[in-house]
Image (cartoon, rainbow, N blue to C red; front, side):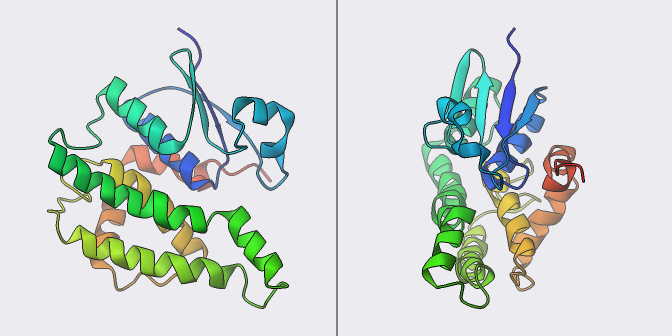
Amino acid sequence: MSEIILYDYWRSSASYRLRIALNLAGIAYRAVPVDLVKGEHRSEVHLARNPQGLVPVLDIDGLRLTQSLAMLDYLDQTRGLGLVPADPAGRAQVQALAQAIAVDIHPVCNLKVARHATQLSGGAEGMPGDWMRHFIRPGLQAFETMLAEFEQSPYCCGDTPGLADICLMPQIYNARRWEVDISDMPRLLSVETACNGHPAFAAAHPDRHAPAG
């Protein structure tokens, strides 16, 4: 069986998602860091892996996969993780939660987007933190409201972690990194506590994967 390789960056939200899912699946993999700060994602070597120049990239089962949501779906389908309900209605509701973060909050708060906004502002005071806070807090407030439709026990949508939790935790990490106030979001904080206590999430945390020194 070929080696499973995850090309990632320790602080990348999308990479964080894949680390959680691989851990949930009990899949041993080799992590190959791609340093976004040093521009390694723009190298010819990495562009050959992913023409978009993004992380993560996952080599698994003889495939080379990109886009975290597609990779999560592949792992769910092939490893039986149960990340979304089987019924179409429940599946759509859980995917809506996940996409509220992965499709709406994450792209606009991508570091390269924030850096470009900072450049366009002429390096205005408070950037890029103000940019991040402007989008993260209302996005998470909406997520908090959406959670009211589900029975938390104790994860977003039930008693086992799923797709919504996998997308939420990296965004909470970013919220805390950029000093976003989430103290008035009790449902979200309850999910965070549950996920922090789960070994698959704990082992995937960026602090566990930060480069030495």
